[in-house]
Length: 105
Image 1 (tube, rainbow, N blue to C red):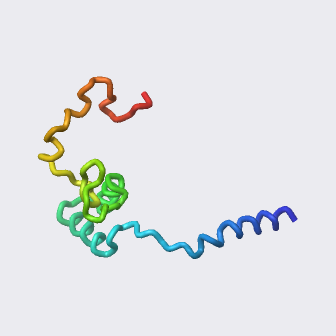
Image 2 (cartoon, rainbow, N blue to C red):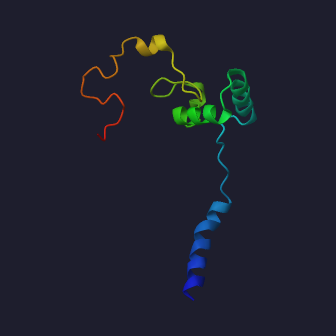
Image 3 (cartoon, rainbow, N blue to C red):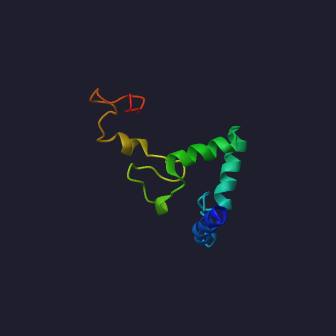
């Protein structure tokens, strides 16, 4: 009896997920995938590494062509160096920030 109640509860929770649309993890689909494949071949870098770095940089959110809040563009979150350096204080300039980016230490 207890097993059937658990199975029924699990089914009730999972049924709404069946109609959910799959996420577009690769951004613009085949075009982006083929661009990463071409870059991997041209620069002799594993495609999985390029995809991993791009996901960590942008979560594959292109912001509809606009820059992100930190000024990055596209899946690799590229920035314009002149814009980034103009008017920006040097990173870690106050001396209290951990240069590794790890505030837990």
